[in-house]
Image 1 (cartoon, helix red, strand yellow):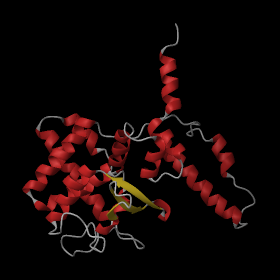
Image 2: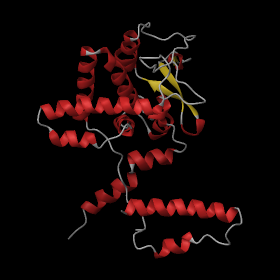
Image 3: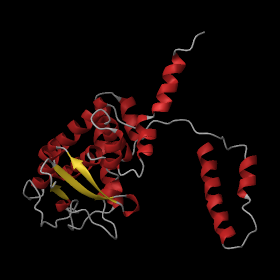
Image 4: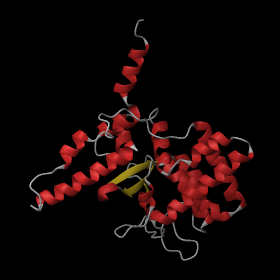
Length: 262
């Protein structure tokens, strides 16, 4: 209920600001209502990002690989889920949009020769380069391309869409990719139910594609500094990355609070 009323107030603030700017009202009355709203709790506590633990993520890889081995249609599901997690992508960044289509040649060997990168257009149409692990090239990208009848590695002049429809070959929109991720999660849930791990199954049932991005970023904290991770995630400020994934102020307060004397 609290979240509902917060969203209502945010909507009204934006609406009355529009009316005020258009000189249709003399003041923004929402500020008065906000002060007197009994449902609105002030302040904000730290909420860690939703992630999958290592055992659950291993089960994702195992279940999706098994499904793809048995039925080639699940190669797409395996590729999408592993790409979102390993490359820290939002699902929109893999989707076809009016102004952008992800192509295979957006993967390329970096000019430094040190490794592969992926060119991404993210939120606000901001362009960035995401580093690509060698293990991903060998075990995810090459396998997926081979399932499509393509060479293991993309050519620089190749213009094949990264996520084509099996029926039409047209690049997939976000709604279609949401369905792919949901079907992939269902595969993992079925494996958990089979082995009587119903609590884990319920946990995944409440997850979204964004959990994959959070999981990859959280795991990468041991290998990257905050500045590098912010660039990978496409955060406009390192502060966002630190507050969401590192949360040093919160952890320090909890650590010191645990040692207070009686």
